[in-house]
Image 1 (cartoon, rainbow, N blue to C red):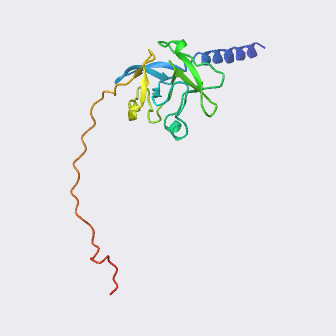
Image 2: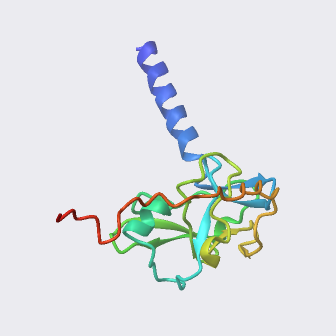
Amino acid sequence: MPALAAVIAVVVATNVGAAQRPTVKVETTAVLGRLLATSSGLTLYHYTDERRGKISCKGACAKIWPPLLVKNGAKPIAGRGLRAAKLGTIKRPDGRTQVTYNGYALYRYAPDKRPGDVKGQALFEVWYVIAPSGKLVRRAPTAAAPPAAPPPAETTPTDTTPPGGGYDYG
């Protein structure tokens, strides 16, 4: 019986630890400072074409911009530096439950692969990260300019079709 009690204690401790993992936390990025992120550190965004209480990023949009979801009936957990009262949920058109912060539905951007990536910031002038205050960060990321593209190569025509369309009717 002591071995069984030890196993139960480990299972309970594991479940308690998992319950404490934040759904949303603060991540500090080099280019935009402190912003909202998933528990694994991936940047969270909001789609400004959506009005509070209405989800419009679905289908193909939701594949590129996956919504931050919790199990139906679950409450999201705020990480350190966030106000739990600003966390909420909204029901998506497909019935799943999406996390919100300060009323903004939260999404990831699929090309962001590592904590600190902000490749979706200001994309199409409708996707923006959110500061821990709950305000949208509308400035573009400041990063080193990309290298200049090489000049276009000179091209010579390669069309060797004879006049008349090339149909040798003899």
